[in-house]
Length: 263
Picture (cartoon, one colour):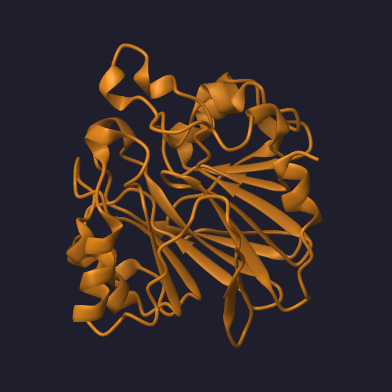
């Protein structure tokens, strides 16, 4: 059984949700009989012509094995909207794709049927079965992705996740962010416009999630950061009990009361 099949077969109680970190800013999230994929980067396309951005470890799931009810893209950078992940994806006709306008256009160019693509920007909402997804304001990290959008995902059982996307740490971003999501996913690489570890913790302190997990620090040597620094700052700002350093492809499971990590 491949890893994607194991994820789809993973048993959750009605009140639980689980997420699997794919590395960089990519995730698979399951709850309420729905499966969501966010920003999966499952190739080494960013290294073409730029070997300094080569992957440091193999892809955890082959693109052709990936499967979701909802596929979310936050912006059109290769490590978030990857043609080599999209093109082999086998469920384009049945999966809903959510993205800001430029990224949505790219998805259609890559063969996703236009009827399956939903453009969703900040302060816009859409329901897909047991999921409500809301666009959240983000400040883009470069001029080629001016429509960058974060997303909050709310399941019908009460579980929620806020993926900040790549975004500058800025008072407007803090003011627009959803308050008290259950899980917050935030970059910490501190390069090319993203928050550094201390800024990411201050961001989380404003948002007040139950749990905060760092991302965007592990895949490329030139774009890396030490997550222990993030963990240390969590302690300095009284967030130590909320700070969860993820392990790639190890499920993080939570409900309305607590969380559990499997070895």
